Image (tube, rainbow, N blue to C red; front, side):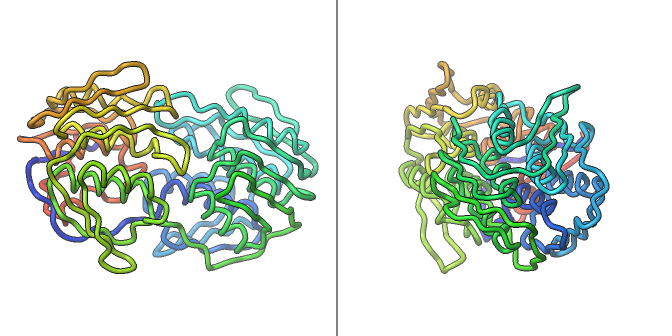
Length: 417
């Protein structure tokens, strides 16, 4: 098991390149199961969750070749089971349910795992697929589903679930007739999935809006023109790192058109953003101002950026309030930040953050993916040395973060615990 050793209080300088989005890559990889023909996917990040998904596809019989691009051939799938041993650490495993059911008429998928940040039920996925004609039971920790042919229908989501929207959209791509998803999630990653499916021959309209319409087709075709969008959460994380350390860095391939809420809160906290060219922004700032944040579904402020902003705001000149409305257990990083000298009080689903003059390095433990990033931000701005254990969480969603930070001048080492 690896850990980070970070010597704080060093300025960052230079250029960082944003990788492909984990949250966009995983559903697009799952969508390959819909296709009898090979596809080529560009800008795939080399992340733990991506490699787990590739291993899952290979276990099912798909052929995967991952060099610069990822080529997936699911023409000879031999199994429609997603076993617990492979998917227990990754909630996105549920995304294979819709594609398997739509193409092969049956699926056996382990109930998903992942970070312990709160309850994320899959009942909306199951009810939607039942409405499309599937028979589904849950036995021994597995979702077992079958359907002779899924049928298009109108589906209303009680909550705009991201993975639920993606699962239904994939299943509907091969269903008979038209499926309409109402109160659909609007995240940019859903748009990216719809673009990928349409390049394979699907007929999807309205992705990114509250109503999505999918006209089912009999087959999809091969494509070599699919690309993963840049990771808006990674870009936002580096913005927080720059402001927390009073540094100036250039960020290449930040998907700024998908980052309005993060951009606005960054500017409100006294950050500065300047467009350098079509692919690059320069970000900097110091003397952090206190702000209030409320996480919401897209286009609101993303819950995946909450921990990073909490960490940054521990150095603000005043009191900030951050309200978490998406997950009920997503303040686990607070206890670790307090070990470094942060002044944070939790009240229900709100964190009340009183800015302090300095943080001090300490041994801390990562509890989930974004909490890991928040501890790295704190460590970079702290006096002294911080040891961050259990960084396998971070490796699920950040590609070579330690290498990228070293290239910016950070004093960071990855060592075995």
